[in-house]
Amino acid sequence: MSMGEMPPTNSDIWGQSMSSSIKKCKDSMRRRFNDEQIKSLENMFSTESRPELRTKQQLARSLGLQPRQVAIWFQNKRARSKSKQLELEYRMLQMSYDNLGSKYELLKKEHESLLLQLQRLRKLTEKGGTEEIQKDGIKSETEQFAPENCSAEFGLPLCEDNRGIDYLGPESDILDMAQIADGLSEIENEYNYESRTFLDNSGCTSPLWEF
DNA sequence: TTGTGTTTTATTGCCTCC
DNA sequence: GGAGGCAATAAAACACAA
Image (tube, rainbow, N blue to C red; front, side, top):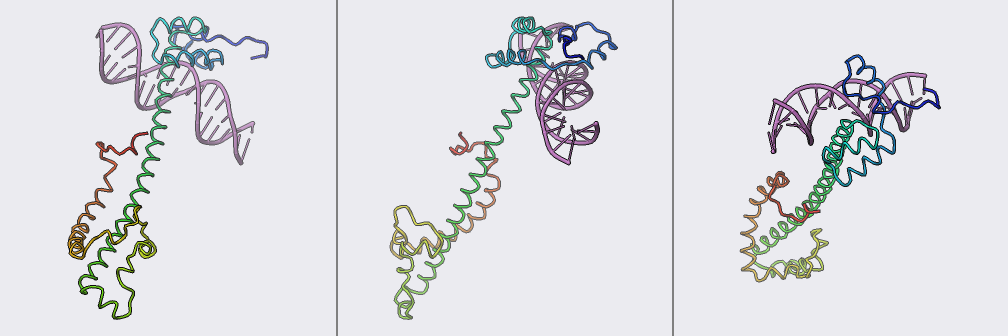
């Protein structure tokens, strides 16, 4: 096509009644819509993604297109829009998943540290208290578990209120805690199993899922 | 220039709704 | 049953690196 030559309009190309040979020929002359046409179509789409037949006919007339072309454009546009939306949702879910994963790892570490603490405490109670240990010149257990030492000892973040090990209360309570620790170990197995399936839980109400 | 990947326009076949 | 929508797909148009 020479520079000054007018390109065939889309309505010239897309007659409704065409023989297959003509259709093939005209098919090979397919043109993309021009900027003005795209702009108008986009404008209409932004206000109404499924316009009525009459609206599509009016738009087609004003743009020099066949109504069918306009209908198809809207159909394709809806499909593109939907896939973009899906892509966006996928990215958001991915971010949420990563976020949840790192949170889980933190909780797991904290859980392991707590189990370790309980094990040490259990040993302490089995040995019969702190006096014997102090006799051997070893640092007293209460000293070891002082809040200021907890973090360095176990790699465990201190409690927000810095209650540390004192929070556990008297030794009779510690015995109960040791029993709980046994239960915890069993629960941990289930926990690990559930952690593999927690994302399947459609009833999850965590705010992490709400953007 | 050409090979390749992406985008855009159009078709086909199936489904739903009135 | 016809109209319109959607998913899948074809094929032309386009972009771009080598």
